[in-house]
Image 1 (cartoon, helix red, strand yellow):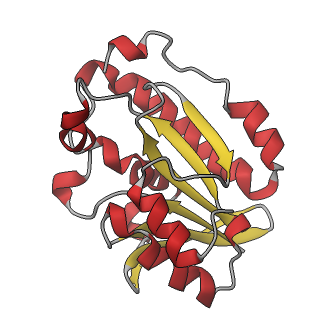
Image 2 (cartoon, helix red, strand yellow):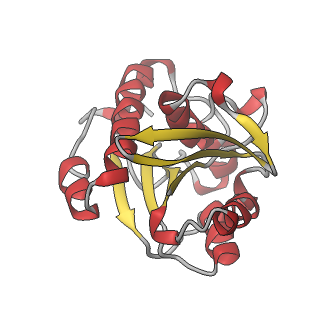
Length: 194
C-alpha cells in the first residue's frame, strides 16, 4: 500500500495559491468529489495497475502536515518509503520539478512536521518549483499568492507531469523516476515570469 500526500492549506481562500500545488496535483489524480474526510485529512483511494493506495489532503494546515500523515500511515502500516509528499519549492524556478528520496527538510515546516511525527526522513518528495520572492521578507506573502496569469499555462503542464510522475512512482524505481523527470523544464524562461 502507498500514500501520496499533497501539501497545502484547507479553504477556498488558499485553493489557487503557490503553497497549494500539492493539492492541485492530487486533484488531477482523483476528482475532488472522490475525497472524504477521514481523521484530519481528506482522502481518496487510488489504484495504479495492481497497486492500491491513498491520496491525502491534510486539513491541519501546511506546517502541521505530519499530524495527519503519521497516524494514517501507522494505521494502514504504510512505511515511510511508500509515502510521496508533493510540495512547493522556492529553490526551483517555475517550470521545474524534482523528485527526491529522503534527505533534509530545507526549512519546509510541513516536511519537518512529517519527519518529526513519522520519526523518519525516508519518505519521498516531489518538489514543484514556484521560484523565489522578490525579497526574503516577502516569503509568506509569496507562497500564499496565486501564480501570475502568464505563468498559468506553464504550471498546468508542470501539474500534469507531476500527476504522471506520482502514478509512475507507485510501481517504478526511484532512480528511474529521477532520470525521467528531474531534467524536465517546462519553461526555460519561467524564472523571468514569476
